Length: 247
Image 1: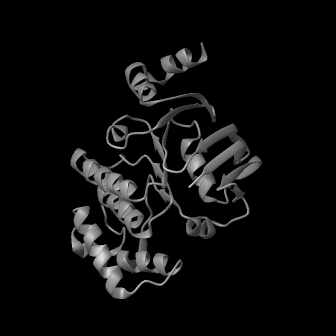
Image 2: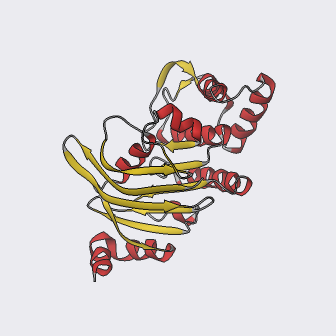
């Protein structure tokens, strides 16, 4: 999927959070955005998904050269955009399998046999207990279990643009390896899928190798490079790296 964000300015509660933000992600590319707290990284993810609390003052978001600003969240999801939440929500009264099946049925009909077969295969690959499929959606799940549940939805819904908002939050080392291995296998099988990784740390980038790394400050990108930029941030911290970027 081809993603282009053009001169985007966004206010949240009358405060400017994104300022003249520009980003292009080509089909099959993996981009990472790093930056300190409060710089607008998570705001960007929610604006792309179409959350109504985020006011777009100017600019545009294009998917395959078409603006999506007038599309609701569910319409953007049906285009193939999927946000892996930093803090996934829970839904009482609906099981995991029911939520995933309903999401699939909203796009195209899939037989119950095929659904169960694919779901159980993906659950096994993620090393999730099968009984989690019959529990309330994320109800009582640990942080790591919720993140695995997010990746389970990725594997089942097969999005074309995946936004990973602090994927490593709540995951131990073993679980991070498992989810990243599944994501890498998915990307090998779906080569045109684009990925945007939002993170503070390089740990997740060691498993999901980004093609391009961006550094944000005050709601805009101040530096772009390859994976070595992430290592520079890890070595020097944001402040010193910002100074290097601005020299």
